[in-house]
Image (cartoon, rainbow, N blue to C red):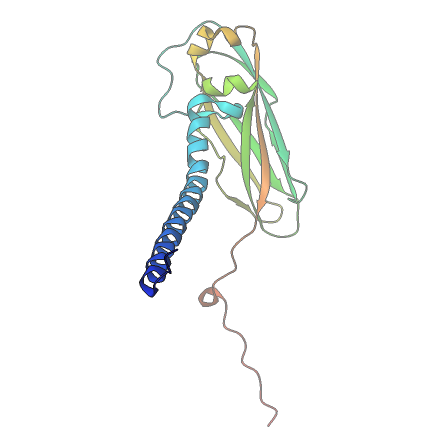
Length: 207
């Protein structure tokens, strides 16, 4: 049996260190990839929702529909407020009937019923969920922070149309009504910068 020499021990140590470095590199690469994937997941998911209308996500349009068809659809409007936000929020009208491809406008009204200035932002969806791919908004207040002073009331318009291509979707042939729903949540305002605060009154000396 051959007795290991100091050189053999050194070679084994170096080989072990190389293997450990490779394992460490692979683990670090996997970790970085997972972190990158987690950050990319949100915008990719949002893009997927916008393209497909998944989960009732509506579309954002830059121009009106190029044609209007005779098929009519009833659009219902719903407004909700998270219980931690002291607002009243509701549409001016609960529903309207329109032709597919026709551009219409509806305003929501929000009132701050609290005793101080608060900021809210809204999320939305459309039901049935499959109709989200055909509900196009030209103007909307969603995801925009809205500040209201105590007792203040504002109108927030939504300009939209229902894509006439919905008429060609066999899964939506039976749909006669679409509901557009918004929910407002509170937004915590950032702390006022020191430079923006009023000068503190100087303390008086008793000496």
